[in-house]
Length: 327
Image (cartoon, rainbow, N blue to C red):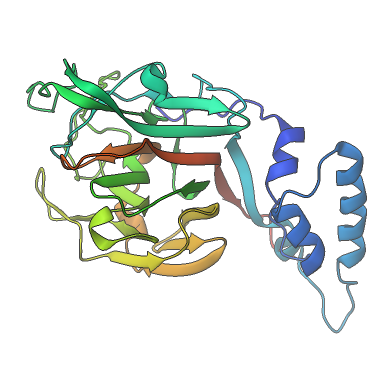
């Protein structure tokens, strides 16, 4: 089920994402990370500046070839110029006793792609309507006036370990019932849609493990999010949400980069590139391919005064590339 990523739109990607290199001038790197390179010619200019910033190797202080060449390499990038079905699918299911109904194909403007960003919404339609969402036991969601968007890279883009990052924002956070999230799930998970023979593993067992990179639960008020690994207690449905959780303050109404990375035994959570939390000895608990999920949920029947929106600028996955050692 692990896919080989398609060729990425490299020019657009270079405009929006800083390429990882260990030796860079701080100012130049900041311009790349902020998306200041807007053309091929500008990128060439920046590349020349970066090459000038690289240290000269001397006998007293040589940088190894491994140090120079190793680092994170992008193998999947989506900047939402369109909704690419090679990368994502609408995920239609009922979980967590959520109050809304997930809908397909941007119905009610719940999964809009425009002006280079994805907008996932919860919308109050004003009238209760039938909902076809089913839970894992086959129970059908009751009629509801609320509809929402949820997408997953399941059976499209799935990777073993590495680094996942999304740049996103949620305006007017803290509204009662809000529950937007950016997270990962094991590719053998047995929840809808079931599309492959090996999708038989119940949550949160190995093969169906969960990592939450960004999750805003409105009960805690505005401008905070949770990041965590779900601790597997060893049986179906047995997941500890609290034991490995960080609650982090930040301005949710502004764009930030939310990421998790793991190569070995530790999960490292980052906010705008800075480490904010680390789950020691948890990396090897997720050996399976994992897919990404972006969704905006409504978890109670509180009234809404306006549509809720999570806006996503881009999503990427990277793998750690290590070159041969030596000087």
